[in-house]
Image: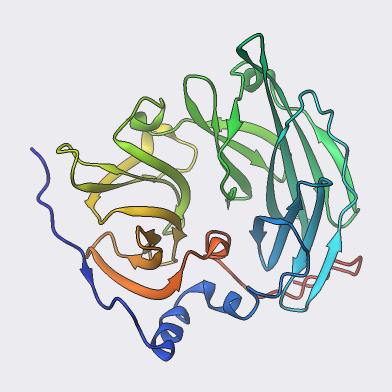
Length: 319
């Protein structure tokens, strides 16, 4: 039996600036409002964010930058040259805080796909780790057990940093799984996706994203209901970290979604509606609140924004 649909309540389509700011002050993203037009690097994409630091990548020359907007300090990293097994390598970066050593690390994964004689050939990906305190890169071995799955690509969304581990959704030709990298022992492992997300033949799912939902690892997906008309949000939460059997699923009605940026600390979803406006959506009450901002790509990296005094130009870390 299908679930009864309750139409979410939209508090306001347009809010005054002072009201919007008051709403944002309840979200960790508020601080970034001051910095979003002051990125000091041209022609870069925002790759990651962690504990006050932003990571940017220039595909033109494969350069990586770190930036602390709180103190306006930045650093251009010396990068390792990828093997370039194919003409168009796919770069993915995750930024993590290494609490044991009071340090930061960047994980780089490069995927290689190539069309040969009309057929796509998937080559083994490569990985490397940068450590801020030593300003150096080291290549990291991806286990054979993961390589044999022929990772096709990694979802182009920010890595989720939780429990000292970077998480991303990795796709093979036939399935997907959560690829995890522990920044302490620098080892990869796999977490199985919830049952309904393990294959790609789920036409009812428009897209899925990893998120941190009330402090727990989660997969949030948006799609159509059984009637193929109504819109549904699926929230799968891993109650016992690392235990695939602990996935629990919640299904709620929602208005049509264009993009998903993450979750606030209290479990509200930050989503972009089809008309380009960002709203916070409470999956318990089904209430929506318009934030009065449009299509901010930076928002997906800053739902957990915090200010920091980390020096990224060679100085001693001060967190």
